[in-house]
Amino acid sequence: MRIRSSRDSDDSFTAFVADRSGRLVAQAELLCGNQDQARDIVQNTLVRAYVRWRHIEHDDPYGYLHRAVANAVTDHWRSARRRYERTTDELPEVPIADDTTIEDRRTLFAALEHLTPRERAVVVLRHLDDHPERDVADMLSISIGTVKSTCSRALRKLRVILDDDADHSPSSPPTQPISDRSTGAH
Image (tube, rainbow, N blue to C red; front, side):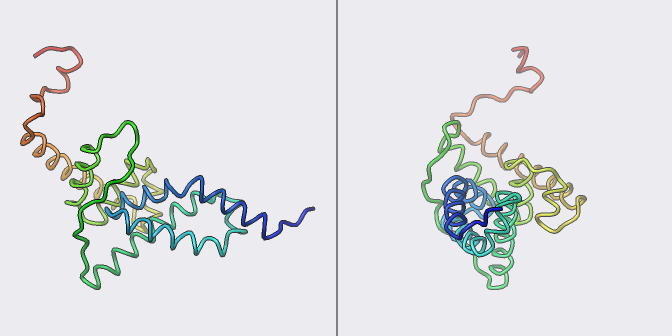
């Protein structure tokens, strides 16, 4: 039996951070709406995880840190609410995925700003990170029923917001019912 040295553990942690920290920052940014806060939250979470890395690395380190980041964002909202702080800065320019335009990203962030912190967390974890309702409930320490009702309410809000934006956009094509789109009927 080989005993792992702290050097092996450090190398493992460094490789994990290089490979997965970008996705953790993206998740945190979607949850809190601010890239600088997201980076701070992920950095603090990784610092705490480093201390326990020997225990974390053999199970599911990404799952562990994914949940830790979601919890840290929730803690940040709670403490910010107590201090009555609100972020008001413009969203910074960030690298984006090839299939997303800058305008789509801005539209998404603007729409998410209209949701409560819990609604935003549920929508991001459920639909953007594709977690099952049970996992979202566990991550946010709420019931599955609360996840369902919060998600339903948030999606309804987003539909109204995005429909209003599309109606006011001069470049948006005329809306056609979904059932007619596939057949080309007008």
